[in-house]
Amino acid sequence: MNLRKMTALLCCGVMIAGALFSGCGNAAESSRSNGAGESDAGTVASSEIDSATSAGEDSAYTVRVWGYGDANSDDLKAVSEKISEITRGKIGVNVDLYRTMDSEKLNLALTSGEKMDLVCIHGMSLSTLISTGRILPLDELFEEYAKDVKAVVSDEDLRCGRTEGILYTLPTNNDNARASGFAMRKDIVEALDIDASKIKSLEDMHEVLVQVKEAYPDIYPLVPTWAGGGMQSIFHTDNIGPGNLGVLEDATTDSTTVVNLYETEEYRNFVYTMYQWQQEGLIMPDATTTTENNPIGSVGFASFENIIPGKELDVKKKAGIDAVLAEITPAIKNTDMVTGTFCIAAASENPAKAMELYNLMYTDPEVANLLTNGIEGKHYEFVDDSKKMIKLPEGAAEGSTGYTSLDWAWPNCMITPVWEGGDPDLWKKMDDFNKSAISSPALGFQFDSAAVMNEVTACQNVQQKYTTALSWGTLNPDEALPQFNKELKDAGLDTIIAEVQSQLDAWLSDNK
Image (cartoon, helix red, strand yellow):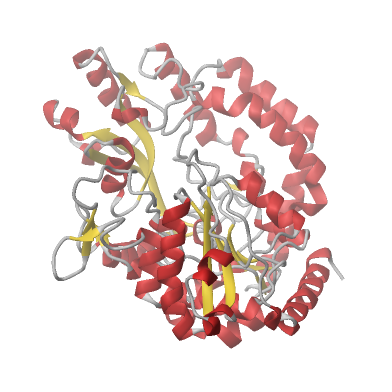
């Protein structure tokens, strides 16, 4: 019996035990920092919710949800209570909502067995969570308590939540594909009469950056997407191995050969191009060390971006500028983009109730909107009586409401209102975009890194030395790229690639 299947059986035992003792009530949880600089931000204590309810409501199970993002503790409490007003009537539970952007804190809580039910695992390794028994298999729970999700999520996408045939997470109903390219400041694009539709390659973008440097010498033509040299990938690859350690070279083709990204022609051309741009003064000099997120909004003209419907509004919310997009790579759909963000923790005391709430996240517009956008009049207000679009409350500044709106971080944003400034038909266009994307031949494959963890760790240490510097042109690729690949091989990359290929071949055989 392999490790994953053994883990699934152990998790089932935990699930059954949780069901047997689900009527025993909940221990109150203390408030905690949300890791985002907010005072007293974090979870709402179950006792706080209970104190506002009647004795009959006190006996309801409280589903504790760890979501991603920022929120003040008072706002979390208010949103939790509003959701609980709905869920007590529909599925007989209260909801205790906590949000964090600190994956280390969440991982520690999962490891310690702290009481939690639904957990957003953004930024964490699904395979590690499975192999260490920190999350539950969902097949039986899904069939019993979440059949409604089948009307929302396609069978193809649902397959992406499975590992070795076992369901561990449900795919999000959001942007399940990505094109990639550049976001550019609209005011400069218009002033220089730049035709974004003609930018189809790095060579095309080079001409634009040179033009911007000449016309606007006080800004940097190209800047990072986020602090520390953050950059959205523009490669055609499907990263099916752990952290770019083993990829399909071109996910738009039928090839299922696993290769070393850093030996591909596309990567080589990219790092040589970035080195050239750095030498020409087209890139922010401190791109790899800047502590500023979204510097395009203050000191730059362009940055690398994933491109999806509505991305212009997303850039405006993040960076405070109007943007024009230029697509370099077509829309591609792979497992990483489709895999769900939520799982049920092995420490859940009532997995059945957790799954019932999970179901409502996909199917109940009120619950989805509360989780995504917060409370009407406090965190947003409707633009008009149609209630199809929302905006910040009068007088509120972006990021000041106490509850951050992150539609991608919740199971189903497509049943929530669109923010003002966005396309009223955004969700229809997003659905069409997802359906028209090119599916990777490995869509649905999940790699298990357990057999090569030592090699993965060693290779990740090598990556940290080279990838950011090469990506921003601060290392000469003539010298650094061969050395980078040599150190990767010495650290065991070939062993990792062989394991990824072996698992992929077996998966392909099972999914003909």
